[in-house]
Image (cartoon, rainbow, N blue to C red; front, side, top):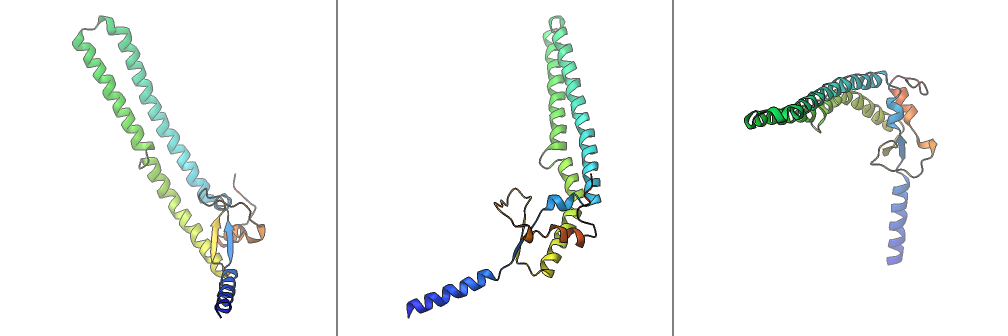
Length: 176
């Protein structure tokens, strides 16, 4: 009798597991089809480059101050030497604070990136959810995500092109 219940239980579990439908998408591939994503990346690159130039200019100025200090060090009194050293240290501290404010984990670059890319990511997520409902899928994995590793994926389960169509674009016409 126990064997009968065990067999029935295993059959039911087996049928339940086979009823789940899986698919995957490649969000990197999808995003390459979206003009607003390319525009956001271009904006991010321009901002990043401008901020990096400011950071580089700050450190170049500090380097000049330090070289001038080294050249004048012999001629300076102890009080003047300490004042110049403190100026250099303060300037370096301010430059590092600026760099952290811009490029740090909660810096301006991160916040700007979130502000520009969040609407795009929400749009893609919504399209993925709609495709999942239409195709009656239980799970969709992201092939391009580093957190989700796929050893093998049959292309028959790739619904990336369906998501691109749902977003109103033509698959295979990636932006450069």
